[in-house]
Image (cartoon, rainbow, N blue to C red; front, side, top):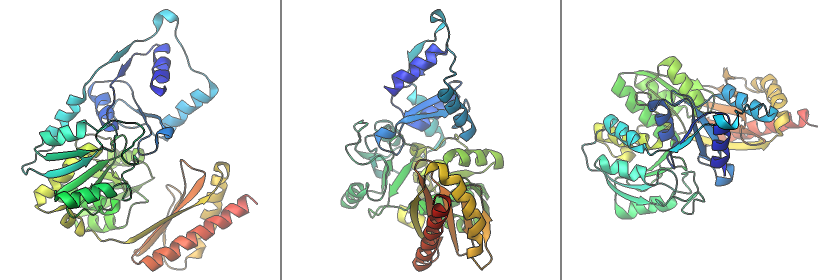
Length: 404
């Protein structure tokens, strides 16, 4: 329904539309740039359930639209100021299959010597066919599960979390393969299960692969959002690198990569951007590159991430009406710093992040829910819990003060 409505609008406005079929989001982004389209539009709920389907736009460089471009589109829709052409000037609709271009791009970027034995869980999503095919072409022995395309995601939830990947973990343990790989619904995110069947935490995986790229490049800049673990800073410092923090969202990470000429960027949800290849978070490319990292350093998956320190991260959220979010955050920015006596660093690029060398607390309004999110990380679980409780209390008080 969304596809038909969107295409109708495009051709009614006098533009031509080309349907690429069911492909992962990074394939759409790559082909938008490679085939010289003006705009790419992905209809997807990404890692969310199917009722959250929407449209994500990419520019002709294959980079997702930022918040300003999105607001422009929303304003046009809300004011109903769309411009249509006469009936005899409408655009055309064509359908093509060019996913092989993407496959060849990844094959040029990644060469594997070892015959890795892996299980791929596509979650019934857009990578159901492409990911197993590509990894086999790279020389891997692939067993695929949840590889039938189904937008209702009967195999598991579309987000590859520790809970949803318990069956994959069990399969990896029972079969003795080298690695389990799982994608979200549109395959711009990737998760890993190590050779022991243990889910590899997102923050650890992110820091480990960032360290690999820094070693390969002899240093450089890593771009990551303010809600990523401080372990990435420690890994970067060890590898003569520097971390640039961004607002939450892969668009913000991509923008920082371009501005700072970073060697790698990613979010702690499995959305990794490898700029030497292209600028869209790409779960399929990232999984191939992860295998390359293991091969290059001659380590198992568990050994690869064991170099990364693990700290306690806790998360919570407090209900807050969308119209009250700005006032609540302003109140918190006034009051919260005074709650801490020690030397702190304050960052306000997305909410408010208060940090020291040993801990940090981030409070930011959700972009998708009527809530304010609180995240705390510390070197001990006890301190992380204390910080989280403090943050929840402060947010709850601020919400009551703003909305009596």
